[in-house]
Length: 123
Length: 385
Image 1 (cartoon, one colour):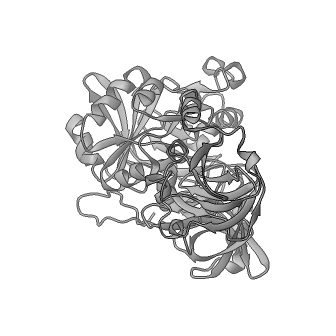
Image 2 (image 1 turned 135 degrees about the vertical axis):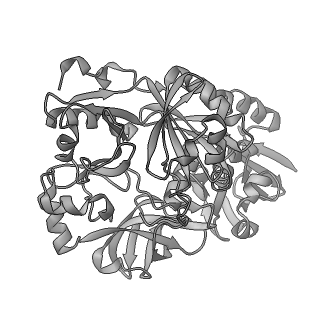
Image 3 (image 1 turned 30 degrees about the vertical axis):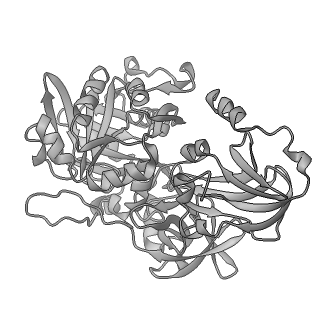
């Protein structure tokens, strides 16, 4: 298992061919109170960098981009009932969606946890 | 108007200015954003926490971006009445009135509060519109009327059900003010002008304070455990729940007092006597009925509809959302929209399009959350506008 991070403040957990994707604690703290999350449905093809999910905070709607290409396996059903999971557990139970990775080479160039921490510290 | 009162033109100013409390906001953890030409705090600990605190306790908002103007001179009230549809000449000392600056077509140039301060009229106008308002007033008011812009005054709003008890501890007697009245107070030698009004739907006060004393006053207020600072985010969600329009979003020159459903701002006598800019068109709209009207919409589900979302009845587009968001108090989204008159009756089922989805919505009365104004020791709480 290994975890990658993007400069759009998403995390990607890789387990075999499956990636679990969410937003980071830093991202949720910037967005504030989250009231609705729109996740892609199973079977959706997403391409790297394209809109994949939408997160609505009290103040605004923000797009979440797919950090890598793939086929969506499922959106997190728990977010429908409790979107605030993104605030309380952004990097665990508040994941957004899982996908089957199309091309693992797209992970090249993403940050590891230490790299992401340094990136956030520099913002 | 006398030339010595000429304001520094905004073109001469930096694009984004700082408020007197800028450092104070940052020290309190405020996240600053550009708003109305100023750096302002959008939130401190979080919009929902600040929203809920305001509904339950008291919050301190910095609204120093707003324009604090005054008009002085013989006939100032009558002169101002040529530019707005409210009764200003009949306003007793210490009384305040919500009104609208209108253009020739009855379009809304700005909304504002006018107070009879005694020696002069006080005007509080929107921060983003104040330079336009000053130009408009100067263009249309006679030269003998002096217009001043009190840019050396900060404006703090203390809002919430505990606001009166808190403010009474530092300004004894302030609790005797009732909603939409104001008076002068002395705070340790600092002159304050305190108005019992606000933009949250809660009881509360707006306090005009010399800018160099604003920080000390803010510190004195938040020293009370019942008070926390709150930012623009909570201010917006609170005013939306209270059904209060936001200029530049729910009001602009393409809207008018009738379509905006602000008939209470049209003093009955002045509807008949006229003599104000836009009168002809507004009276025609009153007689004919407006083609569109500002209404409240309550949404099903949790997905908010934001400004710009289109409103449908079946396949027909019948309106457009001008403000919308999630109501922390109610736990579901609400919106204001301009909707065709044929579809704006209370209880009408409509749909709002958000990202190619149609959300069910119903026309609902505003305020969405009951207003909680203080109208005196014998009055019942609740607003009748």
